[in-house]
Length: 224
Image 1 (cartoon, rainbow, N blue to C red):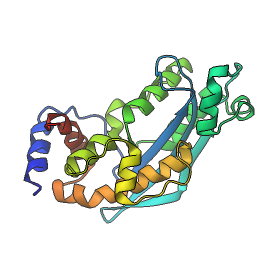
Image 2: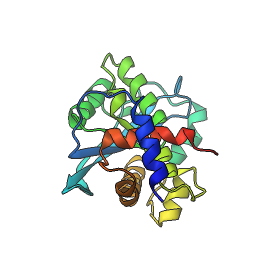
Image 3: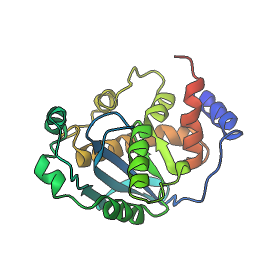
Image 4: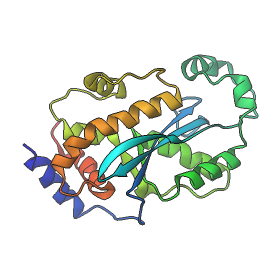
């Protein structure tokens, strides 16, 4: 049953670019909230993240190892942002009283350390963080440290007709207390990683970050 994923992993590995060493004992699951969905113009509002620790090769959530911050937004909130505020719940007052962006992002980078970054549809989270870091005059987090759970879930469970995070949460019976709230979404995404882990162990001989990245990248070769 798992010969196809293994074959795709082996093929993708030949082209996959290895990055700097990462901490395989601690992965960081994260979610960001923003003023909208345009990565070129919308603002990063908040970051929430949680450590997933590996004990004997098995992942476990470490709720005490978590990070959450709201970034200060000095400019007035535009009327178009009001609907967005209702979605993520970060009001004008919270935005204006948040932490300075450079300080918040530097603290997040220190907290992440060498841990890989795991997200669902990670390209959006990465783009928002990269843009905010550049605007603050800070280096971006390594591109090679990211793992997107969306294609990984699809290749591990090809029979599941799911695309959005809500679809996968429903498939595994994972309850997200408050959708589109960064900390709650992060916890749900971390639980999704745990549900995917048994299939990942069956698919890969050594289910580390690089192998999981290669397998997720191989998903684009699968017929739709």
